[in-house]
Length: 299
Image (tube, rainbow, N blue to C red):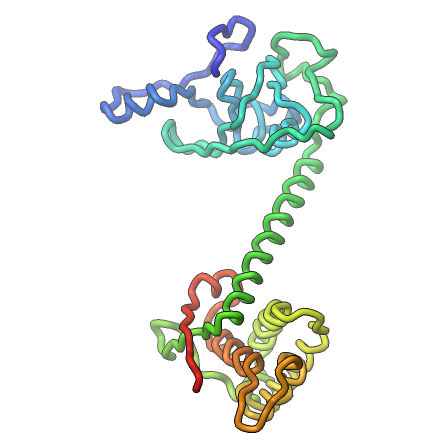
């Protein structure tokens, strides 16, 4: 709940608005959030450097914070660094206009966290940003490290979700749908072994795909198999019978080949490699969003 008394807080900066439409007036009544003006002209109350991605605490409307600085602060305390009001469950950042901004909801504060940070000397009331306790500044390198760690966690989560999807595709016998080779799709004919061997770009793209795709199966030596398959593709088509038989030694160990039968995993794997190599995409995550799969029933 927003505090009604603001006597202990610095003056709230509000943007000057022209006359608004009824729709905007309704949105204003619903949100009633002041908008930071003079973006980029003030310094962060936490790091005392130029504000990066100005962030507001809706409960008290203080906005002299970098997003990364305030995120690090909220890991230790849920009170405003300037006035000690409760921050609430979210903060506002990434401003583009009065009606175009992003809410960031805060996770629950960890009970095992160190003692919550408080402004200088635990003294109540507002603190000018210039007098913020220098010992509690968050250096830019700390913010950068926190940002990198967050990005690495997000990337790891993204990779795990993508790998889970690939496992699901193999488990349900879903094959990448064929796409015609033309200037519109930018798909190309599958390269010959000589063309593949002569193209560092194809080898690099295929290596990235193989390293992820081989993780679908447990207990494989991914690096060895990646090198082995790249060598095979420089000499023979990935979908050839001899290549599939070699791959089956690793991918179909639980279902040995029977005359007249199929190497289910090896054939499926070869098809997926073939489909990716023909595509124009270098980013595996982009390819994942574009590729269409279909169920193929074999006799």
